Length: 343
Length: 292
Image (cartoon, rainbow over all chains, first blue to last red; front, side, top):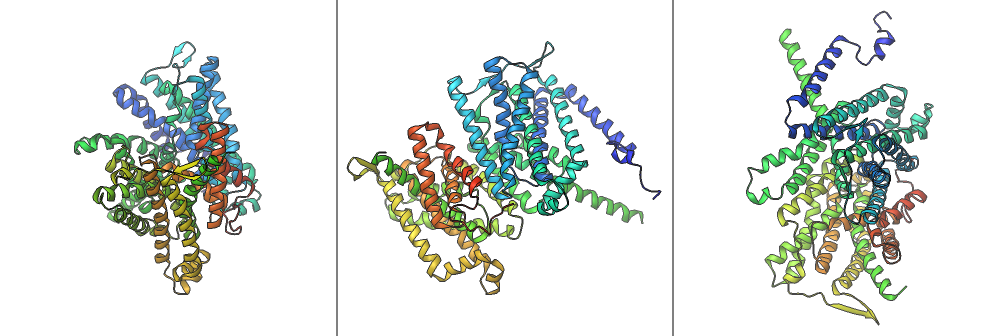
């Protein structure tokens, strides 16, 4: 028993020295980034941070609790429209709209989660898809009636008299929210809740037999995930200074699903990797399209769709464990090679 | 409710019914939900655009050629993609079809751009209105849709009930292991089911293109036909027909009496109601459902 590590060390997030060093390096890079990056690069970084929140939320629900949802775009729209409506109708400030968006998200999470008590697998995915269309319809209806045009303008938020606009302030705000989402995800994974979710993912009947309150933890997974997604949607509305229902198509949902597949199902770093990949992918395609015949250059978005479909198919067929799976394989083969050369 | 409204409901129901046969065929035989079905339907319409461009003087040849390509398309999709998903988690198969849908959307725009095409006009066909009853008129292409839906349903019933391949298909759907034991080549049956599924979808896409043209947003109609398949029960062809009638009635009534914007959401509201009350659908078999 003596080689067992004490609980305090097990529970600490950054227990070992190497972890602390890695954290310090990561923090330094993240803080230094906005100083050296161009405005364009900074905008990319902000988009990645924003997407990371949604990807982590979906990873909690699908990767950990094993329930597939096609409702991400609907939930993002709900958060964004909560902000849009409050700002337009009441001129509500940032510290009112954001918690409201969170409450709206939690409520919708409950609604989206109710079918999970009766359905699973593909049928559950379809029910969230149906709810997606309902949310989008309500948003479109408000947009058509209230604005008589497409979209709601939103002023940059002010926090304590400081107006939040431009790449750098937003970078630090989004970094803060993404870090919070990451911390919540890591801690949920390590806790009783995370273990209950993993049991649900493997087999919910057995989880119930083990004394896990199946209904409670299923609904909780949906509510936590939806709250995080709605907050990401609210931040998106402020970040773009504009809300329109056109931004929340089914393709957006597919992108988030692709993030967790490409990153690696069931892995928190995978969600971050996948978010970066999916956000940066169109820019890479755009860069490549510059070398193609002009005919294709004019249809970058179509090229992006097609290439994205191919990449998704390739990952599903060849590397279901995603980028994290590739990383693990590389690490293993390096370790094997090192061990061989030492012996 | 005027007779014209009834005619509109029947036409919309026929479209949904024709498209939803594809969902049912693939689900019934291989338990895969094909979320690229709408895009495959759109591909059928574009195939007609392509053949119409080649043989504008011979509409029949163009139509038959496009339909054969539609049949082949499903078999190719199975052989290249879905074949590798046999035995994998159902979820992975669904995700592959979603990815395929995105790929097809991109490809159709790359090849045909976002422009609207009228293959009927290429043949010099005007799609004249037809009086089907006093004061009721629908377009000739709509009438053709109703007719072909009827033909496809009768044909599929006879095929599944009485022919050798039909029996094999039902056997594979009921119990793949036993079917394989009895010497049925599952991959062949699955590929054929995919072919038939895209054949009927292409037919629907081609008729819709003759009626009102084709552009890159057509795939939405295919997705809206999915609730029809589910309302009836995902493994029942008769159910799909009745589900299509229910969904079309709800949609036309909502457009007529409440709000035209409801058009896109009503099929999914019907779907949510059915999922809440009777998730296996009106005619679906209960025991096979992925229920908690």
